[in-house]
Amino acid sequence: MKKKIKEATQFLQEKGKIQPKIGIILGSGLGGLVEEVTSCKVIPYEQIPHFPVSTVEGHGGNMIIGYLHDIPVIMMQGRFHYYEGYSMQEITFPVRVMKALGIESLLVTNAAGGINESFVPGDLMIINDHIQAMGSNPLIGGNDEQLGARFPDMSRVYKESYRTMAKEVAKRLGISIKEGVYIAVTGPSYETPAEIRMFRTLGADAVGMSTVPEVIVAGHTKLPVLGISCITNLAAGVSTHTLSHKEVIETTERVKETFQTLAKEVVVEMVRKGE
Ligand code: HPA
Image (tube, rainbow, N blue to C red; front, side, top):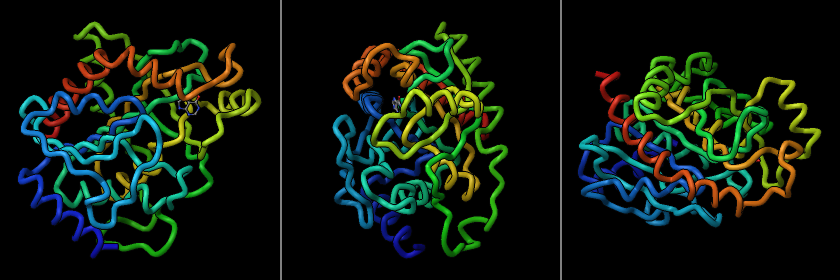
């Protein structure tokens, strides 16, 4: 694993030429943030040694290296999903590479279904905790102590000061913001209404098919995380109509501007907090 991380990291260092401070993973339909990046280098995943290749509609497949508001960043335009058939280790490999490139924190974003009945499509939610319901974990297997601990703590992975800051930034920008627990399932089928009722009982506010494996690896490598979900639809049984990927993409398209404004500002503040 270390050799693979090194090869991918060296490749990106040569291509990118800058030292990113923040890693950003853009969820379904949220890839538009790359339009805001200056001195932008676009590196397709298939060119990067040991990277898997993304297949889903609405997901680009590029590493973007450049500046967001003068902050050096590395962005994943599109991520890898467990339901595509990759292993947990494969979908989280880019987080290891970004860490090796020197990022100091990670912003993860996703599209999610709203379980909390006070949520409406288009809401943005700060993730304050997660539930791993994918039935697997990217840290299963031998552990390399140089990468992280065998039994890493996850109780503070969504850094509190980032969450507070993100809420303050949203308030300042006049963006209404929710906060809650994200539960991760494998997909690709959407949930049943009974599953959603169960998840609500368990304390989940939003459901999606990503993010948690990446956050577990971030926790393993001691990268502080800020997570933002875009509530693209009401979850099964809460919604009165059939769930579709089309609705997910339509909602992300509608809130694009708001999401990008918030993301840009929080990135600046994440760097300030780290200094
Ligand atoms: N369920 C699971 N994943 C999702 C959903 C959903 O309702 N919406 C967007 N991603």
